[in-house]
Image (cartoon, rainbow, N blue to C red; front, side):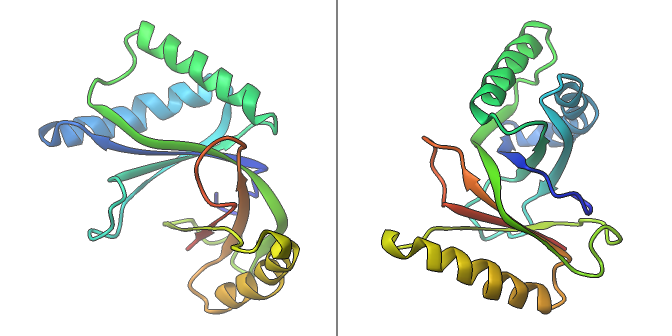
Length: 181
């Protein structure tokens, strides 16, 4: 994300079905798949991350795509069409296991520090959360944006923060906050 503040993102959590082909999988993903997705026009940037927490139950990899638009339903259909075409053209790798994918629309302010745009994003810290009291959601969002995120950025561990809301009809917390560090 390197200083960009995308209006929407798509997260794809994946693993390689055959651990013996992990190196081939990563080369394919970086050199073939992400360029294919970007050439398809549904995303403007694509960045991959490896799971840095060996004790987490999360899959091994995360691909974060910055989307080119806000009509997430239309983008979802375009992604599906693109993936079908890539399958048909023999450009998909059989060892790809998609564990979860979701699309998110940005909400709230742009949260930056003096390092935003100058520090390369080396990783992301993702928090999925939602307000437990629907009648207090406005207060929750105000606290999150005015107090919580500035406090986290104040630690110096992160250079940028974003908040996103899950596309309607999919699982995931209401507020997704990937922090660049």
